[in-house]
Length: 200
Image (cartoon, rainbow, N blue to C red; front, side, top):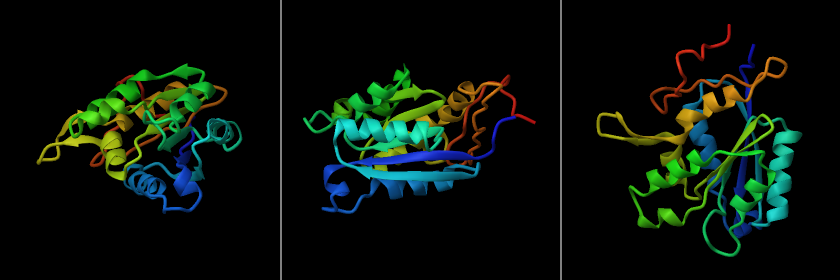
């Protein structure tokens, strides 16, 4: 039987925020969105670190290998500038690449700005955990996770979080199950095939 509790790693990657030059806005916005979207009990394990590839890699490994986070969400460091190395660090610690997440995030952002094609977000599987690079702006974070809706609240473009619970389901084994994540469907509806029944 799968657990009904999930630990989520939240990583803000920014030279200036990590040094206290300005207040980090990525982690508060992530926590706020998750608090609205998740029905499953959860706990955040948060980190604010600089744009240093070795430190990003070490942080991601620690959150998966030692903190037992089934999901890790990063924000920041995914552009084309020399200091933006979050995708490189993420790929370095991954066992499998999940390109659909980055593709969909850019597709969503292209509805608002043509520079969305400059974003290099990636997602990977490490062991039994999913690691996803999110955009740096709070509004963009919510849009990519939740998707786009019309005036009646009907989803017009699916957000990436709709696929996250089932992805984590697929990483579980009989010996080591993964958390069964349920969402508030008014925020984002998790999609699972009919064959993916909820554990007893």
